[in-house]
Length: 151
Image (cartoon, rainbow, N blue to C red; front, side):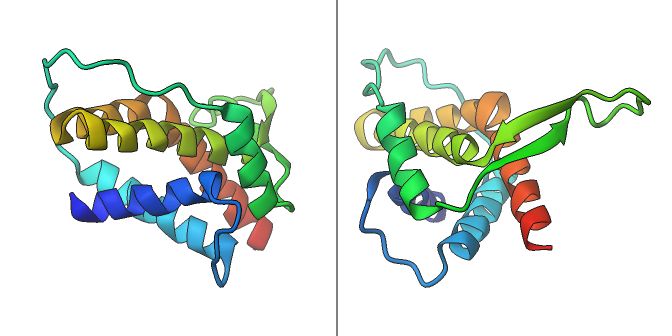
């Protein structure tokens, strides 16, 4: 759990700390995303039935602004809708790498808040839920974008 918490804390900094220092931000975020994805794939969770207050409201535009300042070269890219199906007329969609990372960070801020204010059980459950239903696709798309961008 402590490794997951430290990964979350560092990834969140890429969307909240305008003065973040890193020798190579792109490589570091790529490694962090791979590590957090590995943690997710190994995680077993259990629902916490406790009735907690709602998490903080997050400022998407503010997070996006910080992400953009750290990754000014990130841009739009193409992906194929339902890539697992062979289709001669595949639907190509446009995706936004800045939005991918912003959404991942936004979800992780909520998890971070739940871990600190609710319980470990609630935070881990929400992490698994958000990854499965939202962040995982952003994470996989962003990793593919970074791989394609860097050859």
